[in-house]
Image (cartoon, rainbow, N blue to C red; front, side, top):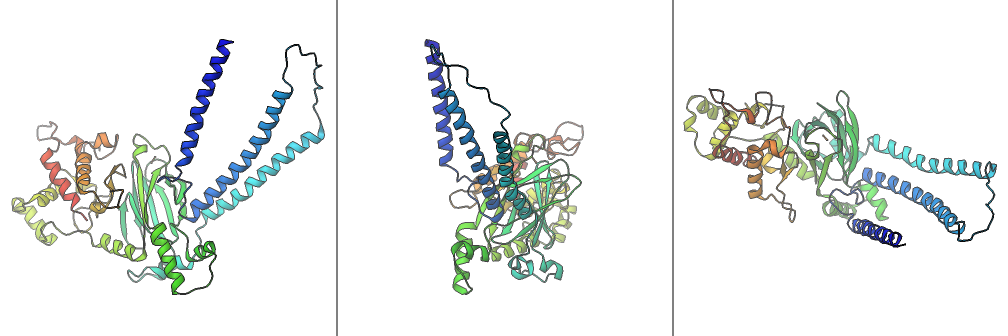
Length: 439
Ligand code: CUA
C-alpha cells in the first residue's frame, strides 16, 4: 500500500511539473522565433492549418479519451465482484463502418486546407503593387524585371547564407533586406548539403537541395488590399494609404530571426540568418549603399592605394590601412571575400563583406551585436565579435572553412620554415577595426 501511494504521489509531482512547464510555455508565445505570432500571409496560412489540425486531433483525443475513461471507471473489477463477463461484441457493421467513415471524414477535413495551403505557399502571387517596377525607383529596369516581384536567390553554404538580388546586381550574406508589404520570390539552392530556410514569423520551411532549385515566396506584412479587408475598410485615398504606411512602419518594419532547419553538419545549430523588413525608401538607400561599396581608408583612389601597396606599403599607415593591408596579404581574407569597391577583393568562397560593419551580427547570426532595446549596433560588442571570430574561428563555428581550408585557412598559416604562424592579437585588432569600418 505504501509503495502504491508513494508511486502515486511521485506521479502527481511529475504531472504537476509538466503542467507548469506547459502553462508557462503558453505564457510566452511571443518570442522572436515564434510561429504563433505571424507577420505575413505565408506564416498566417501555416498557422491556421496547424490550428485546424490541432482542433481535429484534440476532438479525437476528447472522444477516444472520454470513452476510455468511462470504460475503465464503469467496468473495472471491484472486490467480490460477481458480475458476469460483459458480452464480447465485435463485427458490428454499424460501429465499424461508422468508425471508418468518421476517420475518412476527418482526413478530408484536414486534407482540403492542407492542399489549399500547399498551393498557396508555392505559387508566387502576381500582386500588382509588388511588381518591382511599381515601387522600386532606384534605376531603369528591363521590362521583364519590372513586371516581376523582387527576386532573391538564397544559397546555402556550410554554415552561412548568401542572398543575391539578380535584378539589382547585389549580393549580401546572412542578413537579407526586404521591402515590407511586398511579395518577394525566393529561389533556393545549396552548394554543398541540404539546408532549410526557416524564418518563423514570416515563412517556413523550404529545403535548399544540392543540384536543384526550390522556390517559395515570402511577404512581411499584408499588402494594401488584404490590410483593408482585415480592417473592414474600403476604397482608396491618401488617408487610407497613410494608415497603411503606418501599419507597415509600426507592426512590420522589424528585424526577424531565421535559422537553418535541416541538420547540415558540425555547425548546423550556428547557421542562423536575419531578415530586415524596411520601407521602400530605405530599401532603395540600402541597394545604393551595397552597390557603391567602399573606398580606401584614407580616401585615396583604389589605383593610388594599390600603387603604394605594391611599391611602398609602409607609406600606408594608420590602423585601418594596416588592417586592410593584412586583409589583402597575410590574412588572405580577399581570397575568399568580396568587398565591393575594392578591385582586388573578389573571392566568392566566403560571405560577401560589403557593409559588414552595418550588419547586426556576424558569423551567420551567431555573434550578435544588436542592441535589443533600440535596434542599434553596440560598437564595443561588434569589435569584440570580430576579434573573437578571427581569433578563434574554430571555436565559434567548429568545422568551418575559414579556419581549415586544406592548406589555406587562417588556422593553417605557416612561416617560411613551415611552423605555425597564426595572426597575432595586434594583427587581429587591426583587421577587426578595418572590418568594423566597412559601413
Ligand atoms: Cu544548414 Cu543546417
